Length: 381
Image (cartoon, rainbow, N blue to C red; front, side, top):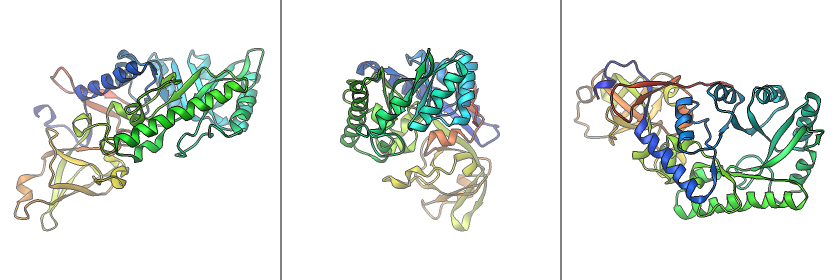
């Protein structure tokens, strides 16, 4: 690919055509299931990507840091869910965002946080909009639908004269779906996520609490749900790029993966069958999410400069700035001639979110063809 020649590597390549296909696929599915879609933008942290998600029909965004909320407000996006239980030290930051015009929804999962957030709103003359996190698969955090704590947290969200903190709804994330790999298991997890989150909302309503929003989501369950009755919105993030973990789960193919790391061959150890590149774990991240799947891709799947897989190259070792690729093909092959110094390779990532976080920009292969474009992304908190 001539447009890749002469680039300083390693760098992050984004195939816009594949990305747009992924965006359109998810949005069609959400439209068909009759729910609003709120993409999780922690995957890209890039306004150019998110504008395309919104243009396809998404309503609002989900963030994992308040810095993301700052950056996307600056990009003109103001309907934002901060989907991590908020710590008290961040209350003032959330208040600044609300006063700057963000329709900000916060998350709590404890009585203490609900009480503190209510008090903060009352003391500062605003009303925080709040979701309670529900645990539907024992994967990470949240409150079980049948736990009395759920109603206690709702009761601790108090308003006085329009100030304080108001219960807006419930949300859950079926992160346990990442460990599944059959359509039947994924569909069952999607139904479990839906049913348990709806149960939590109904229990709160029966206890006298308004609960207008029921928010669920993960990429595997969003693409596997048969029905979303009782759900009002879905969230998903990694679908926009996909990655090897998602291919292992079975919700995409390798041909759907829009993200690769472009790297250069910088040396060899012929006696060991090693090709050394300039993309170590700082370029790929240390995420080895495929280790627990049927096929362990090491630090990623090795492809040629056009994106075609090279089955005989395994990426099992990495240092900070060095990738060590192992040739497993014909031992008589002269790897110094087949993969000379300066040759370009592309690595598909295990986890698109983690690999993207190692880079400052996407170098975009435009859908319409032509020269590479550069889309900035941001990091940090």
